[in-house]
Figure 1 (cartoon, rainbow, N blue to C red):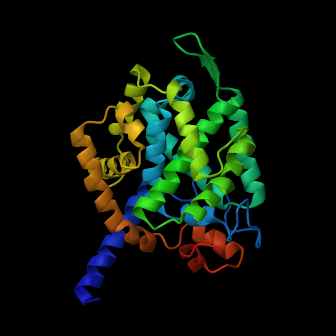
Figure 2 (cartoon, rainbow, N blue to C red):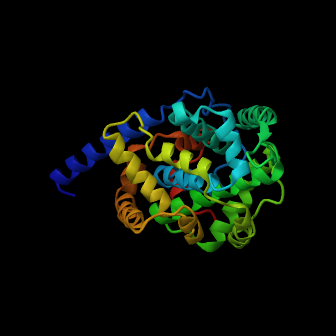
Length: 306
């Protein structure tokens, strides 16, 4: 690499690091990742989960894909719509979700169990009635399953599309591993392979719809401004890249125009090209700290386990 190329790469990674840490500050969750030594948490260094969740571009784009899928389920959406301040603090909600995923993925066992119990308590307090008279509870097993599957699908496809190739056996192993979190929260019959996820989505489609609530949440999401340089550009890049991960049936149900789909194609190419810079810029992140806690070389995260 030439000196000029090195300088350009260094400047780019510095900007990316600033972008990520401004949007998602570290250590604000209070989760302890560095001790006790040797504690592998729920997954550990031999897991696929540690590897997939270490790829920031795939996780953020995948998380936004999951949100777009979730807003299509009226009962799953109701808990957010009726019981949160997403209109005023969507960034805060995104940060809390990110902290939960990071914590359950990489924190020591005691920290993970604390996070799970905290969310279970919150879910018991979230209940209501939809405009059509149907009741919902956030701790309903079928709704917890929907939220989990959409997230796991988004994270896996985000990693696969933007960060690295994922063999089919590794993808199946990821779904089987990561369902542990959903089941601990109360989900049941959680799909454990790619084939099961596809079958699950097919089964759920009759319950999904784009209604006024869905459109309102999507509008709020499409106007979110992260506290970073060029917030509109950053938002549009990741939202479009997230939409590029949607199954075709979801793209149609969301009513995405041809122009929006073309934007997603461009965004996907851009994110794929810059994803390696994120890995360099965030080389000291939570996944690296978790590896060091158990005495493992962080470089192992770049290789699929045998």
